[in-house]
Image (cartoon, rainbow, N blue to C red; front, side):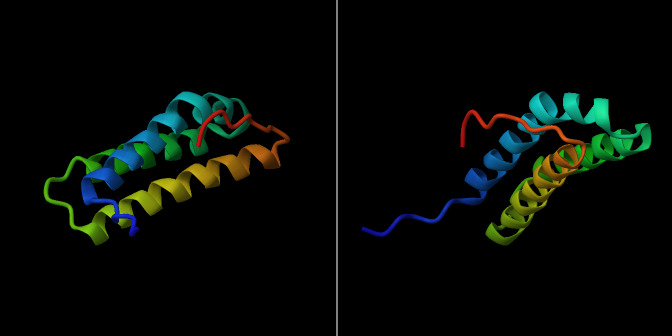
Length: 93
């Protein structure tokens, strides 16, 4: 059986989930390790991503791009934390 492709709404919801994960789980640790300017940049980036995700009528491509950008941000923060010797437990996928 073929698996249906995710809809733009599904991808936007997934991107919103990723942002919540950054805010709730990664950002507190990031604040302890990163410079103040890096924290300000991360917060600004998350705000911009949230604005994009609020747009109506996203196409499959624009929704996929938004999800990819947020996912990249998530892994960028994880990598930065690992460079500072911090590791976080993954509790869900």
